[in-house]
Length: 98
Length: 482
Image (cartoon, helix red, strand yellow):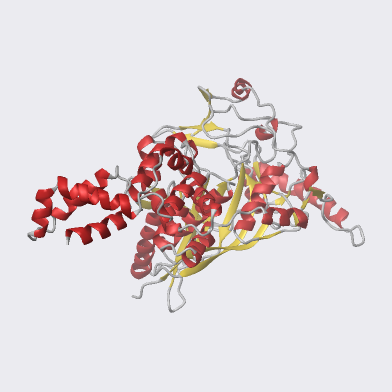
């Protein structure tokens, strides 16, 4: 996989990370190296094994619809930088930003 | 320039009626105090893992089957990654390439009233986000995470909808189906049914206007209005600026309810980049075909099929069939009356229900399950009247009495001797007595005043305490009055 600066900037934007030009220049080769290792792993012959990560479960393995414990709202608000009454408060955003 | 043909595809998010969330045991219901219905999984706290709710899968399968979908043998979960304040984990658990329900259809009427099929591409299960409200003119947004993690079925249609009217009927049909099968409240105001139409126009020369997705629609009526607005706006953009798919990207527009217009929000330069990948915290799910068949067998008759049966087999008008099936509770009650004796006159039962019964419910502002009268009780009244054991007036009196008490009408008729007087002897005696009492009216009638006959008839019925068989009374009156 080619890791160039355009890709690094795009992923940083999706991840809401602010990177300086220097950081972008520095990170691109580091990421390229990491992905190089993954490319190497992918060359291992695993025969006809499925790429799926897990075996499926059946319906019997699911949770029944019984209500459990809820978090104390105060503990949620304590974790947030800002709140107004029972609401969490964040900088204003639109339903679809950009 | 020619008018373009309208293509609308609908994305509907339907909240399923479970007690707990899709991937954790936190309870969910509408209207709770903000941020009181969460748990570590909903909040995306370290170490918390999702566990799928069996009931969410069952309700999704039940809905999929009612929409004629095929149910996948194996379905899996994917992470849709995006950062948003109402999505604490930074991703939404959804389904990307192996949805639970595949290829269904909803039958609607087109604008000419002919049946039309709108194909459903897929329906997949996913978790809802929290709810945010924005200060008018301020710089803050408030977030309530109660809704985060509630189970949603996203139902995606093909662009088979060809007008605002069809879109409205599609949503009404979908809402009616889920009300019948009880899988969702389907209430747009409470947000448990949300929809986003994708609209564009196609012209005879092959040109197409860019697809527009409309958001912020909170009622079926507004969906219709937004589509009508978009048809006009897109036609104008094509006519005036030759705006086509070739030169303009897809976009999202928001419905402005006050101004009744759609407002540009953003362009979709490329497909949304959500970096979907298989959810590592949830194994794929294998669905036993026996489970699917059990669910299929448990589906009730759906409203459209029911209406057709009422028209074809029970002789109801399309209007009556529509009225009696529009509310599932009313429809099931009506079914119960007919079930007591399939030979009962369906039209008579409809008249009782849409007239006296619904009027009573409206007057008292109560629901059908709060009245004393049972479907069997109404069936008895209809039977007693059909057999001419009681006349219409007695039937109505009986109805008003048992609607509250729930007593058996047949037993009351027996107990109080309310049977209609249909023996000739007593009717003849009553007619003679009435003619004596109303000698003036008899004279007027014989002198040619037709209206005077009604006064004599009324007097006969009074003699018979309202229980005379009107047909026989008329016969005898005609004979004796000459």
